[in-house]
Image 1 (cartoon, rainbow, N blue to C red):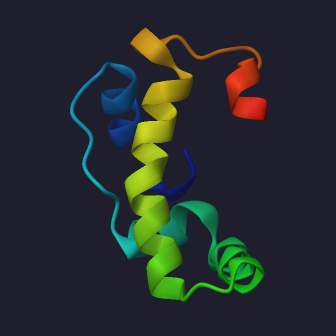
Image 2 (image 1 turned 135 degrees about the vertical axis):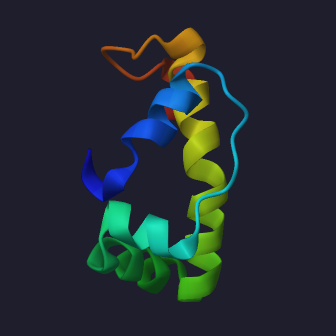
Image 3 (image 1 turned 180 degrees about the vertical axis):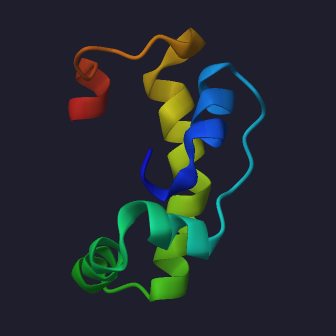
Length: 80
């Protein structure tokens, strides 16, 4: 898995408590260009974007894969 997050993602899918990812981990997992693009498009600082993503990514994975079941498509509420 890109960014070396396979153990963390396995934990999130098993329902283990989540903790925020570091800014460095977010940039390694998503790539600096992606994170910089998000910061540019939102008008937020790089530090704010990496902090927010670091907090949201683990929760998003758990929310989209309840009980560890990875969906074959996104639920309707995730599409709106």
